[in-house]
Amino acid sequence: MRFDLQTLRALLAGDRHADRVVPPTGFTAQLTVFASGAMAFLAVFALALSLASGRLAETWGDELARTATIRIVAPEDQRAIQTTAALEVLSTTPGIASARALTDAEQQALLAPWFGQDLPLDTLPVPRLIEIVAADQGFDATGLRLRLAAEVPGAVLDDHVRWREPLVSAANRLRLLGWTAALLILGAVAAMVTLAANAALAANAQVVAVLRLVGATDGYIAQAFVRRFTLRAFAGSAVGVIIGLTAVWFMPSGGDTPGFLTGIGFQGIGWLVPLLLPFISALVALLATAYAAGRALRTLT
Amino acid sequence: MIDLENVAYSYGGGELLSDISVKLAPGSFHFLTGPSGAGKTTLLKLCYGALLPTAGHVRLFEADVRTLERDDIAMIRRKVGVVHQDVQFLDHLPVRDNVALPLTVSGRHAEAAGDDLGELMAWVGLTNRADALPPELSGGERQRAALARAVIMSPEVVLADEPTGNVDWEMSQRLLKLLVELNRMGKTVLIATHDLSLIRAAKAQVQARVLRISNRRVQLAGADL
Image 1: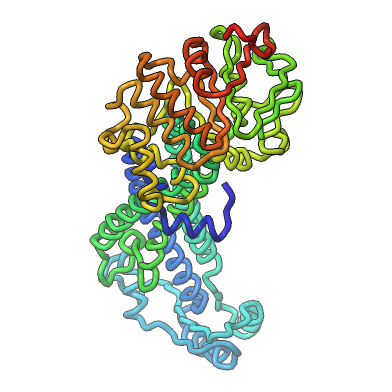
Image 2: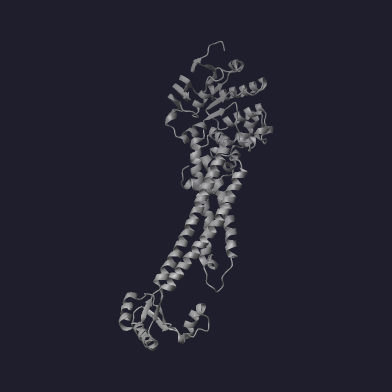
């Protein structure tokens, strides 16, 4: 079956008479519609996972890349002096938007999950923490480390790279897995439609023989099957997407508490992405049926 | 129109037809006879491109069938009406739509044929069976519906393979009359049959050449037929 503008137009417009030459085959029709619907439903979740992972990777990447921490590990009598010195260094470091030392209360709050609320902070050698927010262009961490080593011996710069990178990498990997799952699902749709189209063509060998006898071209015969399977895949997929989107819509939200599982879903224009699935499924079905029909018609006599 | 030159056809290691040379001139009427299994159906299929010769040349409307693409052969079949003994229809469509099928596949529709389709149905005596489904038809009705389907495109050639094989004498005479009428309209007709009484009945109405397949070869039959 050749693909050109005329063929595509004929496929979209349809031909009431041509459509009727292939008898309605209940089983393959239901199979195609159901499988397309189920696959689209799964693809919606794969997309939701992928898009959520993408957002998470961006969030972690952006937010953590713009923050850093300095620990002042010094004897108690030196801690305040070195904190001031470190803040001084930071105030003259290009690319730093703001820097401030955490208060005792804030540090206590950070340690509370491990030591409880009543931790006597002043009796423990807890290092003073300085929170740094980088400007958009970022700062030179290596240069800052060298200056701190020279001027504030008790300061240790942690730019979060060590634990940010694996997290961002994991989120990116998850996003890739989501897209891979979506592609595999489309591949499964193609395989299923190919099998169903082959079954339909084999079951309609007599129809093919009659059509050939009266002068039907292979393109005409293939088109009758291609159009039917394309429409079925589109319809099934559309239903699957609607159900999938409804399920995603009703997934519990984490409210203000950020979390990965509670963040699975679509945001903004992301809701439009699954709406492409019926069209992609239809395109996949069109190509798969055209391939199957082309092969089958070459072997059917 | 249809020209077979030194054609041979082999299948499964055995040669079914050998050194066949037949020319179907425009407006001619031919019978092809011979015992069952002699290769009548094979020869007929060679005449409309359903089979390709293993040797020799088959020219359909001046084109060597070997040089034709599949779509070209489909186009040629629109110029050749074929009626088989075991007629096949699209069983889910009414007789009217089955008869109009050649129009449908060529992009013209039964509505466009309008009165022509009605006249054709009347010509084969199936006006009152137009809305029936093919499985509801008798053997004779199926043959007449197949003949109507074969001629709706006004083909230049009509090939009929044992068209009277499944019908009684009266119906076979009726079918023969229709085929003779087609020949008088200028169509080339080739009928494969082992029914010698049909051939004799036809020769009383039309000038027909009788070809006999014997020992894989075609010979012109003598006056005994």
